[in-house]
Length: 132
Image (cartoon, rainbow, N blue to C red):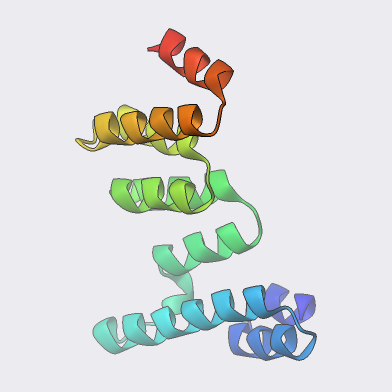
């Protein structure tokens, strides 16, 4: 499965991960393979080099900053923020939003602060407020 992934044989890697019981990676790769099919149908080009596919593969390989950079280089601020949110890395999402003057940053900060308070993480919430 790792060899197939390294060789960028994503459909083979998907089947291998499914066979060894790693449902999460198999499902994630399945989504990437489907995305590739959509990109190829829309553009007629090989999708493996598409920035969105490369960003998803970077996330799979835990190269989160690389994925963020790929998305931001193509003006996908919301997608980069969403990536961090899906990883429960809200401070990174807020930082991307602030750096790119995204209009949803204030709401995201408020939601994150409320979540911190609801989960009794007052010290982290206080640090966040101090940085503002």
